[in-house]
Image 1 (tube, rainbow, N blue to C red):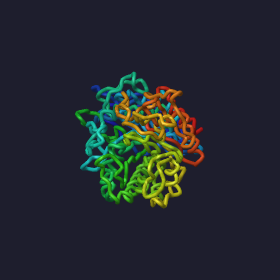
Image 2: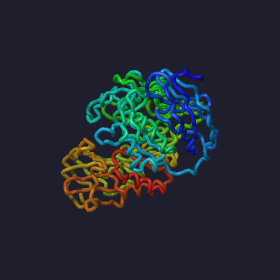
Image 3: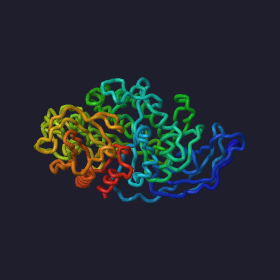
Image 4: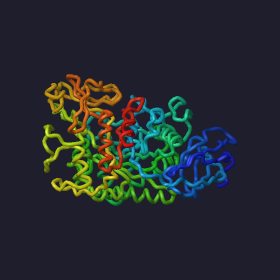
Length: 538
């Protein structure tokens, strides 16, 4: 297009960095010939809009290896747009050798009490050690059964509220909040009028600095899984739901005017996300949040939902010369795995983040205390086996369920081991009023959950960085290869660097796809846990 003359055409477009899956573009800024206002940019390739940027650089990601691409850049301000720049062509590098996946979740809400920003992913060194970051979480509209944006707090701390997540969302954190030069990744300050601000614009800046780092939008989570069953129930509802999520987060068509803010608009977030992560907790199971909808039909519909996402993501990718990720956070308990078609879902997923944690915690307020994520069974484990079989919760059992199957639970197996990414909790679960017993509080009674910590703000929960267990009070179980911390009254279960190393070694020995963390905001400023996770896979 020739443009309308109100915005000058960007010049000097260059490809400053080219990898197997991304190209970093830089250019000289456009100017406004009349009036004033923010200028943003659209990046085109073969007639397709493949990215937008609020500044004069961007990483176009999810590209195919060894392919020739031609890009041009167009400036725009409101309804005014320039002509497209002179094109620049380049060829992506050959595909690299396969390596284990290192992924982690970035919590949307971490920017508040934790003051954990995308910049922290850079300064802690995490950005250079991760392959994928899952941005958590998008919600499902209760009536339209679509992806949506809103500014409404959830009642996430109230486990007894069946409507805790209804209509909740945080568009302010996503794309409305103003980052200043001190908190932004590239040192630039947002202006109120620019089409995209907040976390999303910071993810874009991270990507320009680390072009091999990919981002997915994670949908659901513990509080936002209530309406998955409804959205997945029919072919029509699946198509509507999937297309809405792809339109909003992959094509980047964010709504404007949410809570009175002008941010958003057509393609304002294009090119940020490299795929979708489905975190349905849990299909066909009453084990999710109070009030969650579930049905026996979820088992088949979950597979069909993944198939629909794969189909629509592939269609968009084919048009753009890209290949998008589809991942899922999957349960670890055999009673919940039994509600999945383990032999079918692997065909649609690039990989699965198996939530191999939260197997025990202070929701069993009186105990017995136990490991959050035991790798192996222990004869000393006092818990009752999970019906209808005779197995307890542990990672060995989880892995068997997905891969070789557990006939006693009706689980066929068949999920590829090399697509299983094992979870590492960057937080601890705790009980108080725990007697020492014969082994520093392990497998003992309790009087209830530990008191809430300042950052977690939830009884029985603490971030790694705020607990920081002293070595003298930290213990190791060689049978389950698990750590715990006991101070004479409080018992905490979680992973130390030693436990992370054991899980990395386990993943390698079993031919698994890698490791993932939940979540980055819980790590300390020097990235102790993430460094351990990365090192364990090398």
